[in-house]
Structures are given as structure tokens and as C-alpha cells.
Amino acid sequence: MFNFVQIIPLKDKKHDSALSMMIALMVCTILIVAFSALFLSNLSAQWHNSVTHIATLELPEGTSRSTISRVKNTLGNNSLVEDFKEINQDDIKSILSPWIDRALLDTNDIPLPTIYTLSLKSGSAIERDKLKFEIKAIDQEIKLSTHTNWLQKAFERATRLKLLAWGVGLVLSLTLITSISLLTRTRIHLNTDAIRLLHTSGATDNYIIKQFIIYISSLSIKGILAGSIAACILFLALTYSGHDEDMQNFTFNTLTKGDILFLILTPVFIFAFIVGTTSYTVSNTLKRMI
Image 1 (cartoon, rainbow, N blue to C red):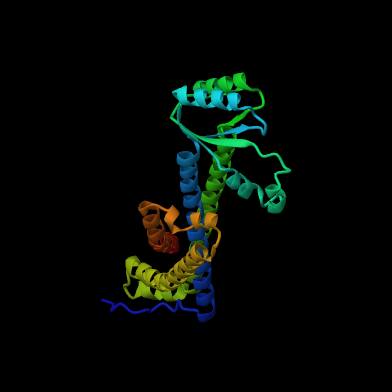
Image 2 (spheres, rainbow, N blue to C red; image 1 turned 90 degrees about the vertical axis):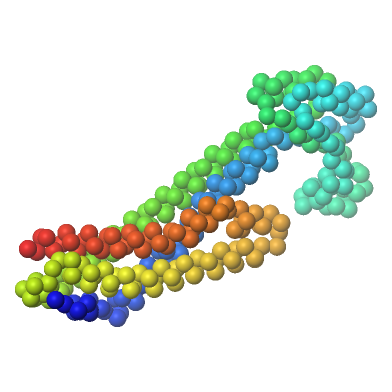
């Protein structure tokens, strides 16, 4: 009966622009939060894979050759130790140079320890404690660090931050949906007379719902595209702005294909939720008007 045109005067240039900007800001923020949560999740996995099976053995300067020989024999005969190697003194100086002047380190006036890195097989905590006991039995001054304590704390902090990020993303999503619902209700109340006239003329609720869906969709698409583009620009800036090697970890390379697909589909999910919210709100409000 009706050719589909925008009959209900829903457009408001000033408020429509503000709504599109709000949607863009929300989408951009949600994508950044999601990226951060996925990054923390993958970073925790990288820590687990790269650090869990690594230990550091520190022998104080002046340790006798016989003690060093006994330590090497113990490491070589221990079933938990897969491999071990000594860190070059120049590498140790490079590690300390940010805190101690390199020229002072080169004078050899500062005692430097002998450090070994150990690659450990997957073993129980009892096996690791046994290895520590065997090393301490050789010399009490030798320090064996398996990184278990700080790694566990790092995992806990990363998990808290990840949960916080998902929580913030959920709150933002709910805020956006609530805003769309309130806006839709306001537009319905402002156009009550036009809606009643359409009902009188024979228009169905579905026809009126489509009027609102097309109106909200046009604004949402603009806002979602703008927010997605802004988020991509920020991601790319973050990827290529770091000069330090450690900063290279905070890039798209840390994400899996599934993570990237999730980020790509997130704007689609947001659009679907906006359309669904609009449809539900209009349908529910129209029922009350009857």
C-alpha cells in the first residue's frame, strides 16, 4: 500500500551529527579495548611459552674453577636441565649499562658474576626444588632463579587487566545500546501524531519499525565506519611508531587470525545490536501506544 519512503520526520541535522559522532567514539574505544584485551591474552601465552622453561644461574665473582666444574656436572647430569650456556661478560655489561656507566664496567673495578641460562624440560615444582637444593649444596652463594614467582604475578596482573578491559568494553557496549534505545523512544514520542496518522491510514507496525530502522541504520553506518577507520589508524600508528625492539611486540603480529577476525566482525556485531535494539524498542513502544 505504501511505497517505502521516509514519511516520519525523524531526521534532525544537529542531533544526528552528534549521534554519529558518539557512535564513532564508542566503536573506536570498544575496538581499542578489545585489541588491548586480546594483546594481553596473547602476551601471557608468549610469556608462558618463552619464560616458563627458562632459569638463570648466578655464580658470584671469584667462584673457584672446581666449584664451577661441579656446577656444570650437576647441570649436565640433571634430567630436568635440557641445555645450559654461559652468558658472555660483554652481554652482562650491556645489561647493566643502563644503570652503571659502561666505562666503569670496562675497568673491571665492579665485580661481575658468572651467569648461566638454563633451558628446562617440563617438570614438577618438586624437581625444580630438588635442582635448587643440589646447587645450594655445592655453594650457598650460588643463586638459581626459575622466574616462577614473578611469572605467576605477571600472569595474575595480565589476567586482571584483561578482565578489566573486557568489562570496560561490555559497559561501553551497554551504554551505546541504552543510548540508542533512549534516542529511539524520544523520536517516537516527538512523532506520536505522525505515527497515529499512519496507523489510521492503514500502516502496519512493521512498516513504522522499518522507518526507524532505516533512520538509525544510516546514522550507525556512518558512525561505525568512522570509528573503525579511526581505530585502524591508531593501531597502525602504534605498530609503526615504536623504535625499541620491545615495542614491536605490541602490534598486529601478536594477534592470531581468530583475533583479527573478531576485531573485524566487532563493528558488524555492534551494528546488529543497534538494529535489534531499535526494532525491539519501537515494537515495544508501539504496543503501549495502542
